[in-house]
Every structure is written in C-alpha cells, then in structure tokens.
Length: 335
Image 1 (tube, one colour):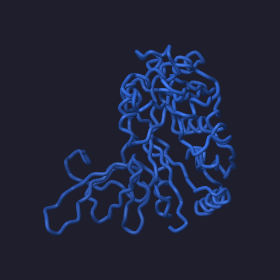
Image 2 (cartoon, helix red, strand yellow; image 1 turned 90 degrees about the horizontal axis):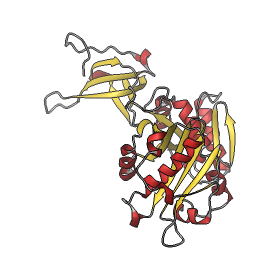
Image 3 (cartoon, one colour; image 1 turned 120 degrees about the vertical axis):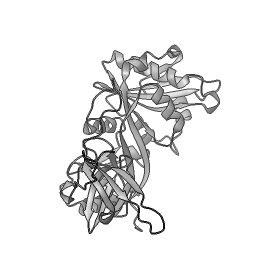
Image 4 (cartoon, helix red, strand yellow; image 1 turned 180 degrees about the vertical axis):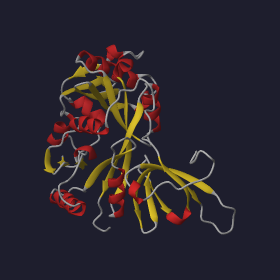
C-alpha cells in the first residue's frame, strides 16, 4: 500500500475528511515487541478526542488512536468488482429490493420509512433510512423505538456499507448509541441472461403467480402462514413463485422472483437438504430468469447472508458479484 511517491510515510488526512473513504497505517501499541504496522481501509466515520473511527465495507468499526497513526490518505470509492456486472447506485437497489418485500403497514419519517409486518422478515420490519429523517438523529431513533414498541416488535434499522453513497456514518452512530448489529448480508448483482442460459432442467419447474400451500410447506420461515406472510410474499410489481415437485406433499425446491423494470430479484430459493447438489436451485433460477427476460428485465439481484457458504458459492458460480452489504441493527432498551 503506497502512501507517498518518495517512500516517506505521511498522514494526509484531517478531521475535515470525515465521511470520506480513507486508507490508514497505524503502529500497533506494544511495549514488549518491535513496532508492528496494520492497515485499515474504510469510511472515516468520526474523529473525536484523539480517536478515529473507520467503518470497513463489512460494517465493522475500527477504533484508531490518533497517536498511533503513521500514514493516511483519502482514496477513491472501491471500483466495480467484475466486468459485465450491471451498474447501479446504492439507492436504486435499496428501493428495488424494498419493493420486493413490502410491509403490511408503513409510515414516513422524513426520508426514512418505518415498516412492519407482524415480525415476518426483518426486511419488512425495519426502518429504511434513505435520506434525512427531518429531525435530529437521536429524536428519530427515539421515534423508531416507540413506533415498534407500540406494535410489540423489536426496533430494527436497516443500513448498508461498502458502496458509493452507503451509510457507514449512520452505522457508526447507531453503534455509539447502543444499537447492535445482528445480521449482515450481501446484495449481489449480475446479468440476467446468463442465469436464463444455465444448463439446467428448467422444464420441470412449475411457475405460479401466487403462493400455494406446497410452496409454503417448503419455505417455513414463519411460525404460522397468516395473512401478513401472504401479503409480504405476494408484494412487488410482478411476482412469480417456482416449485419443483417432490416425492411427498413438500416440494423438492422452491424460489421466488420479483420483476421490477430492468431488475429481477431472486429470493426464497430453497432445496430439500436430501436433494442438494442435483441442480435443483439452478433449475429454479433458470426458469424464473427466463420468465423475467420475457417481461423485459435484463439485470438480476439477490440477497444472501454473509455466512451462508453454500449459497455464496452457488451465486458466485452464476456470475453474481457483491454490490454492497446491508445490516440490521437492533435497539436494546437495556443499552
């Protein structure tokens, strides 16, 4: 990592660079061993009382004493990861993905949206901040906490890191105020045509406009499939449900796709554990992609939790690249 052309280390950042992406080198503080240096790259989210906070693209916050800095500079936003991946802003993808998981009820708080659906999926039961809440942050977070408390739901705020225009400073502010990051997932994007062209037996996939009982028996990410579950699953501009029948009344594989303009979002792709590695997930996605292509879509997105190694390998092989990471921060009244 180069910090100067002449080989001399320089600290070329100041508190005025808060909010910018930086690269820093620091000296590890240890009295009993030779000096060691570590590097950190991320958004400088604060510089107060001699301590820098840098939020990495993963959402992790690093605290760095100013006295340990040996070099630092502002760096440009991370480049696109892969050629052929559709270009999109963070805000465009945040709005598209939100339309694919619409809540039962919502309320505006400035440019934030409070969303609730009786607890089914955090994506429909969290505050989505896409701008200014219109009031000071502490007041906004108090409103969020009260809104969810009245519905007997935990208070979540959904944030994003790792792309131009994402919310590293908000993540750091939430951590400062005792909100805990519970879940981190990746939003990945890719070309839609390659998914439709997968060598998979898409002909065995049954596509429906509405969710049916067999599909729900395979999904089972709820305590009971009440009206709130059906409303969230059925929400979106153009929704499709895919099923591969199994040997019982529970399908061998399922999936869901929401077509929204140029975008096709894939979600709820699940396979019977006893039938994995047989190409069922690829068949489901190929069938859904072909239908989305017929409707005029050209780009694809999906969300996958960062610790789901099997799904990450599958989607990587299909050409999906990470656009940004998103996180759900939960408020604890005991904090």
